[in-house]
Length: 304
Length: 272
Image 1 (cartoon, rainbow over the protein chains, first blue to last red):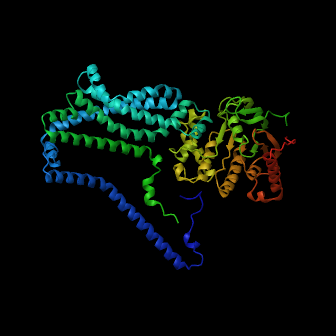
Image 2 (tube, one colour; image 1 turned 135 degrees about the horizontal axis):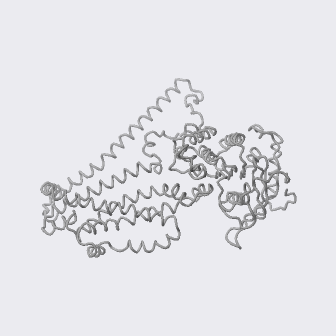
Image 3 (spheres, rainbow over the protein chains, first blue to last red; image 1 turned 120 degrees about the vertical axis):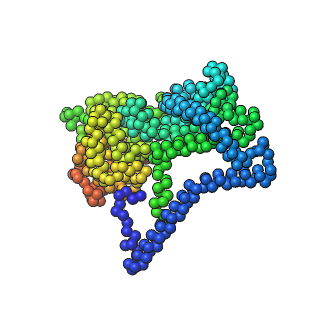
């Protein structure tokens, strides 16, 4: 970073008594060092992208080796190969039910975003609402959602609706809390910048509160999407006729343990995929909060 | 002077007490007037209520007693004819420099209404202001990519973008090193000679006050009162070399004596 628009310094002319050639040589050495650092950073980044896949592959290999080596019964813990075989065999019901679960989760999650944002903004910007609503919210969040599903089934019948509502209820809370925190912790100095201009409270929320809360919001989305899957699958196991949760329930009642594990795998893949989507949106929209760390790592010159 | 046009800023026996009737008295019975187009600097030891004065004039806080009138209008809430720059740059980190400078236009009427239709003209104006303080080419950068001095310049542009009639500067250069500060004095003087706003500058740097202001007010320790009111006779534009001249130094020393006396708690009878 240039210090306050100062003209770029020229290290070659700063060498006290050295001849031009020695200064040049020093410049060469510096250039080599910078190139080496950039190469090292590139190597590290390549390793960073590769590492998760290596870890996953290693886990499955170890799992397979242990199950075969210790001759564990497939009824207790099926080997990854057995799970894969089960996936191939039952791919049609797996796909259909995964689709059902994904849709219920996304609808519940979408509702959680809409209402979570709205309530988060309201609570974060009004101390009165904050004090009024917070205890109720915490109490509500403390209720185990398993206990709520039977009530939802009584109200809405067995099917998709209870699963959507459960996904919504479970993923709603982290969004509200994070958005409210982001807005409530706006620096008074930033607020004063707008207040001094005669801005209305709604302007301050729009121009300062909401943008300020976005990093909190996206951080909460990563939590919310994973717990939304918990909610929908929970509801599917307790009272539904479709979805991965119901499939796993049926499979376990038939003692088809490899299929239960296949359901778990599919759920994990969906969860990771949705998490990745939320993380990608986060990086794109709130890059200012990360201060472009990725680019600085490669281009930043060593101090001294 | 009193018989001529009405002063642009009139502060009439204003007091400010924090935390209820038994709280700290930060400002006591302060009266001062600022003419249109005048540059007034307020100096004083730390904790003397300088910043309190700023908050009262900008309407961010209500006063406990007395009245503040700006442009013939009683200040009971923030006025849009005021542009304000704070001790910290307080740029919004999610906006580019250009976006930050244009922020007041999205809030203050009549610009707010016109902004969509005349975006290009407003943007050109913002770029012009940034160029005036040496920030041309940095419009699309984010605040964290700029040094403290550059951020402070951008913050100055933001205070000026909506053509405020009154510019309030609350120790805007306090957090900067001396070289950057002197640079910015010269630039601020240039901006003021071009745009001719009324300016109230709060600072604890006497050299800065004398270099920039037409009139310097010295405040006492808490509770703050105005101890001295001193005209600065030097012609404009002033150069940084002028700050080493004998009469400039003498004036700085005179103000310094006032402040030292104030810090010792001595009572001064010569309050203007």
